[in-house]
Amino acid sequence: MQIRITYTIVLLLIALFVTPISGATPSPAIWNPDVRNAWVEAQKTRRPMLVLVTMDGCHYCHKLLHGTFRDRRVLADLSASYVATIMPRERYQGLVKQLRINSFPTTLIVRPDGRIDKVIQGYVGPGKMRQHLRASATPPRLTKR
Image: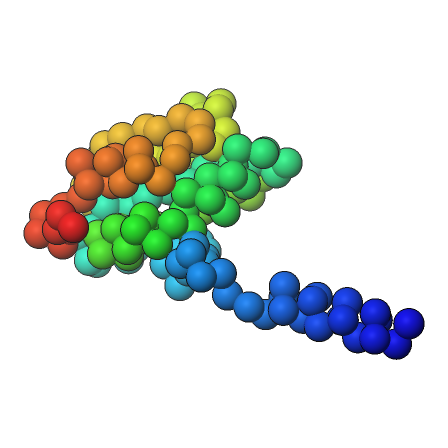
């Protein structure tokens, strides 16, 4: 009985503290937690802003954030050329309404001059997201790999 409990505890600790080998670990450092601060940073650095508009309880929002945006190549593209922020509908209801966003998730790519360059509705896998990111990146910050 004692060995079985110890074995279970060891498995739980491994599951909690071991980083996946796939390189799909999240990088919270690239996500600016506040939309206004992200906009200021985008203006300062003259980089486009990626805005992920989410909604509580949205399965595909979770899948996009914890799947596509954890892909190491997507993270590399984001950190090289974008200011990234998450805009929860519940926190930014007025802005979401003003932008007429009714589908979640919605990913916006906003140019430093304020123009919305791209609106991506729904879940998008890593390969397709990289295509969108590369098409809207400000050269030469993003190079082909």
